[in-house]
Amino acid sequence: MSETEALREAVIPELPNYYRGKVRENYDLPDGRRIIIASDRLSAFDRAIACIPYKGQVLTQTARFWFENTADICPNHVLEYPDPNVVVGQRLEILPVEIVVRGYLAGTTGTSVLTMYKQGQREIYGIRFPDGLRDNEALPEAIITPTSKAFDGGHDEPLSPQEIVGGGLLSQEQWDTVSAHALALFARGQAMARERGLILADTKYEFGTDGEGRILLADEIHTPDSSRYWFAQSYPERFAKGEKPESFDKDFVRNWVAARCDPYNEPIPEIPDELIAQTSQVYIRAFETITGTAFAPPPAGEPPLERIRRNLARYF
Image (cartoon, rainbow, N blue to C red):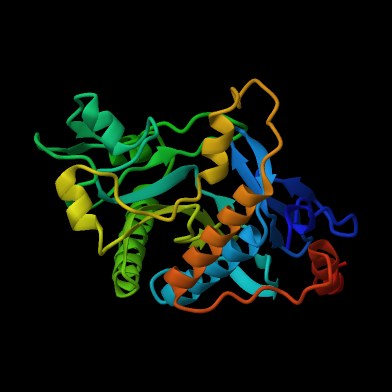
């Protein structure tokens, strides 16, 4: 499959209440179900910069693997999978707090504990950090670093549990529930990743409430896009040398673009097919390593959108 055959759009006029996200297309059915179609768009620099063949299927099927392997810990929104790129779930009221769980002092964004720690902060997310920690060092125990969920293009802001409950974002009972679920999900994820030779360093979760107020896990779980995975075998030596841990390097395209233009203000140059293919192979490798199963691309010959339309016809 080439980029031109990848799933760039998934606009299906017969389905109601269309909403387009950066990567996913969403349709809300009148009966309270939501159809979520994962496109192959690669989002970076606040826009879609390329299409990576099979990316949408990898994300959907990786999340499926984890939803099925964690349903005993926390209920989730999944109802069925009518297509490799599609999940049908319960429509939820998404809670306004994004739950990030971290097992290591890592990250590059302004809300990462490593960034704040290197700026000299020691009281972060309501947690006291000791002096002397090194980049990518294992924390004594997994911690939750919640942020306000940015809607409509806003920026995430760090929050403490006191601010979450005191500010009325979540009730104490809701906070207790999502934090317990998040730590248990992360512990399961780390244990299963370890069996595959991986370190699950950190991840993010989204939770929502159904019509009865029950808290369910939504969106995705432990995918290569929502989580930081490192290779366990090379981690000790790289950490000892102060080197960046080895990971699934999905940033071929992002790095190539950033080296050639100001991607926030200038047109994106035409991206070589070789880089697109490399990135696609990284996503497939990530799926196979994380899940321990072989990737099964759909039969060739039918464009992805035609296949998805056929598989979703009963919802029209």
